[in-house]
Image (tube, rainbow, N blue to C red):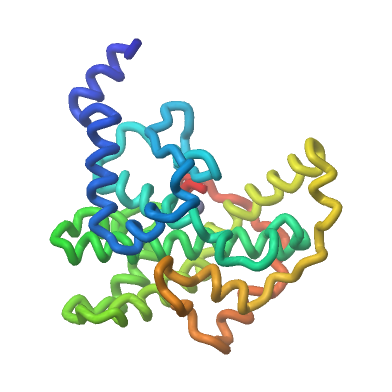
Length: 260
Ligand SMILES: [Zn+2]
């Protein structure tokens, strides 16, 4: 049964089902999102508004989104979480076989790619006539730096396939220019490792047997449906990402956690 405040907010924002259907209809205007949602990995994933979470998330069973969001912010979060669905399918190794340092870097890379891909999805929605989700990312407290890097290099008069290549590169690398993102996700990654070590130590037997390579990073940074990575080969910025991470810097709580 709904509380009075939920009933009132529901009346203002619309019911969960209604707003979720509108967000899904919006995201399906993007070919990138349609490619992911048509894939096998999406079949068993339930997308819903989760009233028990304080950050949006994606795992192999569900995408949980925040309640009481405006539709344009919900679409941006949904685009990010949808981008996570098939990232692992482009790998030829299991992330659980990476060393501690490489696991931290791997998780930074999947977040940077999810943010870049979300911007590309929202740009496709903008090309279909609705710029609200892309505009919302540009003013988002969590993602405005990355969105600025994308938008500043976007030539909106270019309707070719190349339109998003440079913006994707720039937004991906901009993620690493802001130590706030790394500090948030490194802390979360270390928490995951500590949890697995305690609860499922058998999964750690192969830790460190695989190495994260520049090729693997470029495979992750490939749009679904595309044959080629949006990251250039031999870019010195790519090699710099694979340097061992420095000890986690103190986490600023000035901004809310951007989600997983
Ligand atoms: Zn994420």
